[in-house]
Image 1: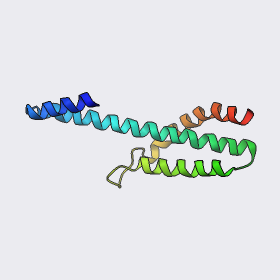
Image 2: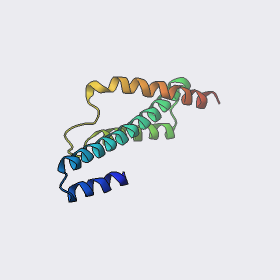
Image 3: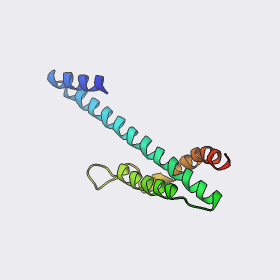
Image 4: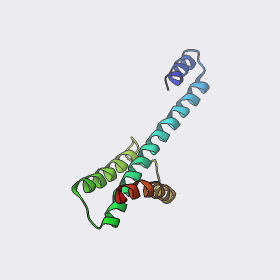
Amino acid sequence: MTQELIDLKTSIIEGRYADALAIVDELEGMSKQAILRNIDSFLVRLFIHLIKNQVEQRLTNSWAASIASSILEIKKLNLKDNKTSYYIKLDQWQPRLEEALEAAIAPASLEVFN
């Protein structure tokens, strides 16, 4: 990202505003991807604890805390800075949830059966 900021500054100083706007778009895209990766990570963590809860038919305090904090973090991360729109829209959740569930099965199995 440092190189992008240098390029942005240079573009502005040299009056190449179209280039500067393209760099800003690229930086916004990088930021969005980082946020989506974080959301995916919390989804996997959430599913791991939900799977363990289902399989073991019990809920420890640490699992409950992890489930609650994962949900809060997902909600916070998904809300854009303008507080009126979201990175992941309602109709975009299903494939993301399916991928997270698939990614959570192996680690949850290891924890349950070890």
